[in-house]
Length: 342
Image (cartoon, rainbow, N blue to C red; front, side, top):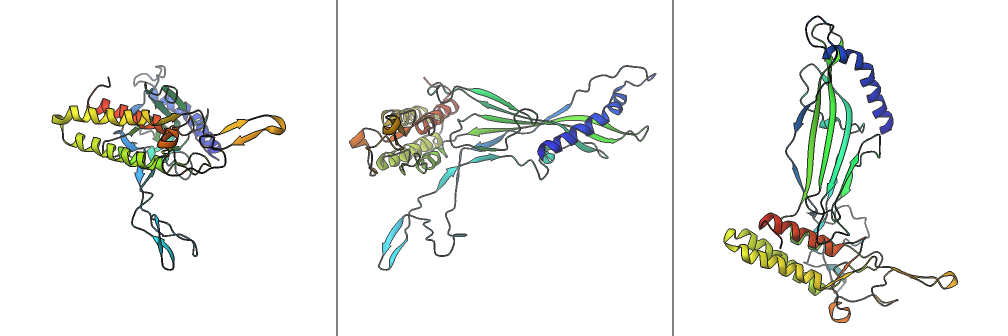
């Protein structure tokens, strides 16, 4: 459907080209050659987007007869009930760009002169991912360009593992079509380019949000979060809050802020198990076996505390780069708040 719509728009633009060329001639004898039209560019303020957002856990919409476990479960004389502790407070955010009912991004066409209507000529989305030097295998840095004619334009991007300072630049080029004041013929009176930039950020106030969102992330079918040790999870929340408090204290606490960031990073590195994947395939042929949760002994479902028995409290895989994600955000925070990352 979207291809048909964009094809229809392209046909409209082609049909308007002869009158566009006429409109581009310089005033005078009427014999001057047409000149290229440079679009008038409007760059809108950058929109800051968080990787995680808070959620309200309510029982609204839960089917009848299904227990709405909106809190950690406690026992009662008649069965179970919701306790007081919110187990899901933050989840991964999504950058969702609404292309409109027709899929033509009409809401992003603004500022045409009175008496004209916008006709979209081109849509481009440029995603730029920065390199994170401390995790270059996961975040090597890259730029991706999407158009309707090439890959199509994706409008839905989950952001939980998106590194901070990633930008999404949406460019909408359109002609403002209306009657020529001299002849009444419909022409492109003006060509415009609207630019919208969305930047993924982390702040001292929201660092703990990311820790809690990652704590809701299962390692495949292990039913164990990527932060596998509950004691370490609480320590990381506390360290995140220390960074928040030191950052709020101002310039007089820069050294303490630097130390707090370094301590949290060192904790993550010391307790992280870096793997390609949490699963493993062994044997071949009739002896082929798949262990979907190879980080623990086969056939076991491990308890809350893993550091004492296995020496790790976070698992980082290419599918779930929990350690690298936290390290990337600490790297960005130090650059933003202190200005260097020795």
